[in-house]
Length: 171
Length: 145
Image (tube, rainbow over all chains, first blue to last red; front, side):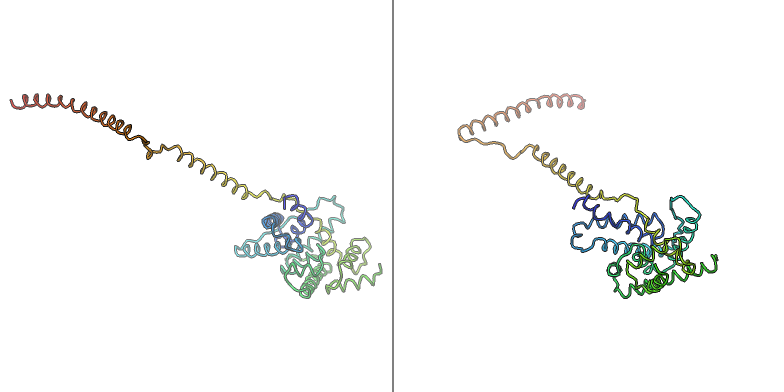
């Protein structure tokens, strides 16, 4: 496999890898580093890629494991990243600004969810994977994926509803 | 789409029982501008998910692995070193091979010639010993007195 072939294989899903990494690692830079790392790992194992039915699923699994490892080591060093990178270069209408504000809240709430739920929510509601694929990537069974997804969606809904009804509370 | 249908879909959605197509219907509905007021609270969720999908990975992929380059460099270096060592060894004069004669008479002659040369040179050295005797005698004359 040469470089062009490899790039053709990874191009369809490299953004997904990035978004999944960002979902867990939160900061843009770290997610970029993680994506590079995952892609380099795939490149190093390019001889074995033919053995996998879906390289994308493999890439997502690697991403998941890599990011969880990163989080574990980060937690060990007591370093927490505070994120503040919401970039959208669309021209700002008032509605858009409002939307972006609520999106930021959605993101904040999502970042408080357990990692597993964040991953599943990301893969289903953002990337729109089938349950079967998610189960494979997460190394779980489909029922467990559904349960976790339902919990994650409800948690997100409850928090957003609270905000919607009472306005934004700050502690 | 009927509001009732949307409500049913939302319930299914939160139980994680919707299909991708149904979820897309919900996304479509919430991205439109006439969302029913009692469903307004769900709008940010779907808007956020749709928005998140637009993020792109902009960095380049570092595929030119430096490791490969290093391995080839080391191969080249070792070849050069090996070559150098071999040529160096080759150039060393081979001292063990002094040559030989096939004809015994020639061999005898040559040996005699060589020995003669040696003895001549030894004699040349011995003749200079005369100077030493001169030194000895002059020493005697000086120290005896």
